[in-house]
Length: 503
Image 1 (cartoon, helix red, strand yellow):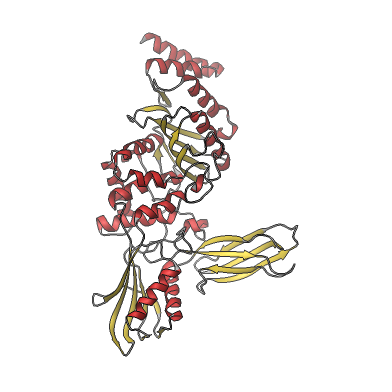
Image 2 (tube, rainbow, N blue to C red):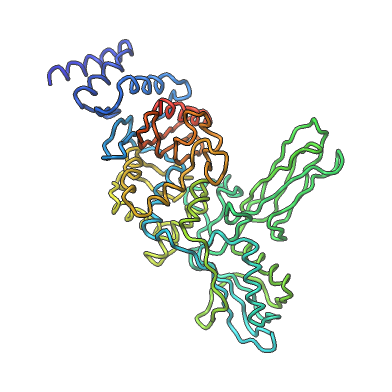
């Protein structure tokens, strides 16, 4: 024990005097199984690898002034193999979705589906509904234009040609708070900051609920305004087209801005003649009315006339069902959620957990349910700060060791294969498999060996999951990089650390 103390003190003194003791300290702790508040090395870890990783962390200029949290854990027994600031609370960015997905699978189950009800409050006489038609949403983020067309067909099948009353959108399944607590105002118009509603719509099968896809193509001639189209094609969004077609060797520089509190979108800038189109997803203002407008359009396309107003409201107890639509199961929804890091799905799942377990579809109740579920799985939620389900908040805090603990513990859950399958796979070119890792770690040494969740917000980059080493052994890892000046360099640092680990 005296020798250990001497080595540790001598190492610390050498560090402060010469900054050359790191390897000595690591070897001392490796041999004796000791730990410090900053890092711990278990007997299974290769000392040269530890030295190499720590040297890289200390010397990379992009990490100067940053905070690095690393946790490596055995998938067999859950023992921590190596940690650096592993118990320090750090911003996880979208690595928080690992917790949200696990809690949702635990609470709701892999077969859970969202429901959308079609109701009428009145009677049908001679193909005329003497009353209101109500579209009642219960959180489904997967409703597409084709689903509204199908619902309109069900109205037609019910013998309704005219709706004398109002067309009502009921989003009361969740509360009326549209944005999570810490969402920056600058993210309101983005697809990843879209409003959360129990009645919403998506433009395509990525299921970015509450958004519209805008496609900009060059005009026919230089000087013409660009050609702009919307998916779905809707009058709910008003476009101001200030984008101009320039010469083929010109620059494509386009700006998309939605005016706060409206659905007026200004598109400006330049697009070269004969160049590829540019797509942008914009979060709409009030997704409930957006979904209702799409439904009204579908009704009109089926020849069904709406005489009354289109508005929001709650279905009365006297309303009776026309049709009930079920979403895809959570086991399928979790693919675009995790592969593409869909913030809207995360927040909807939080509110759904709150509604199902505490009869209130709010962030407050949903996060409480989420914490309870994580506690039952064995996590120490006293070390967390949870403000949302997506990780977009800069107030979210989780230690790297708790992330690897989660990834170890859930291996015993019957839904683990669903969870594991939802994670992005390094180097796979397809969105459906590679997801947010499809353009990273494409080198033969890494491609297909890393199954992990990415994360990025301003000044933060993260990567946590499962890695297969060169010798075939598996390892659970979490890397949280905070206080970065350049998040893209953070990605390169993560890839370099993972390369060291795999090799």
